[in-house]
Image 1 (cartoon, rainbow, N blue to C red):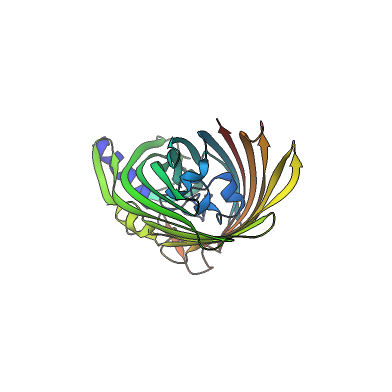
Image 2 (image 1 turned 90 degrees about the vertical axis):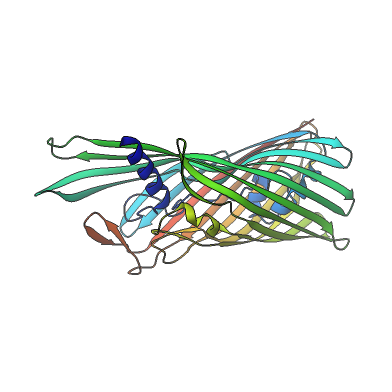
Length: 394
């Protein structure tokens, strides 16, 4: 009986959006927040250079740009403020969104392995509620907390067919786990504290292909496609639901006609609706578009090496919403720079991103909380994200 309750709790919490009327988060509803699988450099240019960036595991053709054997590690802390009517919640989330490494097989062939965060589901809510239990009305404090993520482990190979054409292919293994905890502390000593924890795991597979080619002397084009395969959610040894890994299509243009400056623009589409079967009717899932423009220029010199300076603007929709009403939109402004180390064998990248997320219109949505309904007087979120990436080459 307890095992069945655990499975039901895991499935329900994974599928239901967060009630932003209580303390919580707007960006990590449903199955979580998609960081974008971008390296620090790509984040600092608002994702515009992601299709060309070897450390961002989205386009396998970019693996050829590693050049030498190398290892990359990234740390991204986010500082978030969520607003719903008169209520405000502050939170800090630590992410390690990309770890990658590459090794040349021969002069024109590069092998790469990377682990990146597809969806981050770290959030917490806390609210005071009242319910009828039999003939008695009881008051309790309910807190819910989720810790975990759905991750993408990619094995890829990049082939440099010529100086103006690169091709690539990748195999993606989707893994992850969410730990979900619900706790009720009753004001009356006649009731014991309820504390329930459940774990939900994920598994899936996908494949990707990519291309990077020079159109003219100054213009490069890059594109990639990920085809999602089967995906399942499970509790213990029991499969809770089946769906498909989200497919993704992306393209970008890079212009290098200005000395010391590179400009790029990107567009991405992700089929998040393929995950809908993992959720319930309360969860609204929509496919998402992502647009970015960015610039990377030559900055001051540091120990006989140029320091790259970066900036960008990004606009996108997030895939999961409360009660199936308005989509959550996100606008980002980002800047960053890189510091070459040890005669360019290593480098340290830094980026800072300011995000504005807007969700539900006033009076459009009501969230059911126990036996009563609470109006949400608008919901929005502000966040600062710092990004630190270190690259070590042989």
